[in-house]
Length: 223
Image (tube, rainbow, N blue to C red; front, side, top):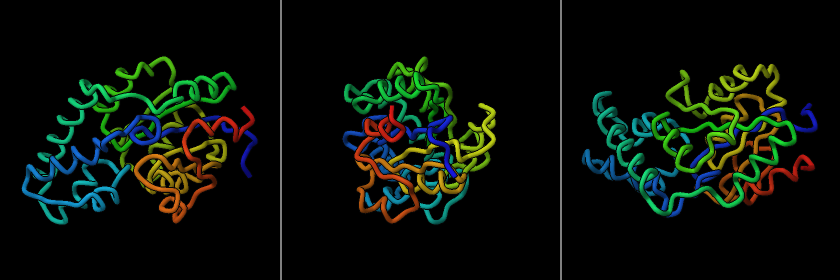
């Protein structure tokens, strides 16, 4: 049984807290694959959103050596870092910082997890000025398994000394976020419907709540 309020809320990045105008993650992943002569559709890329990007590349390649995966991933990382460092459209989803502040003022820890590697995630955190608004973050290259496995959630729980996942909320805009939270037995598994997937698409996956965006989140706990 879930506690009234979580001790920890774990947010995804792109599409959940980071504005994803023009789908730069989609674009850069498709461009990285195209550079290796692999053509993929928007729908194929959407199906692996939220996954660790090397895993996503492996799935989209179907077959290929690990050196080829590493080469494509390196190209993707280069393009993503350039985008998040320089693109004028990079910004947080409106109201995100205020949500972080409200939760922390209520005694709830705030953290990020992501299918990005640490080098990309850190650029985003610094660009958006979030470093002092977060209690922590974990990236897919810092755990044995990324989404949809529970490893990132479990790593953050261990970091904060939280022993029961019923005290944790996982929030994201992809099926892999919902599957991750479910695999970890989080007390709240919350989909937000303004990112890569629609409400109808997210509704097909296990969840406790679906919200139009994260600004609706504090009201779930009377904050």
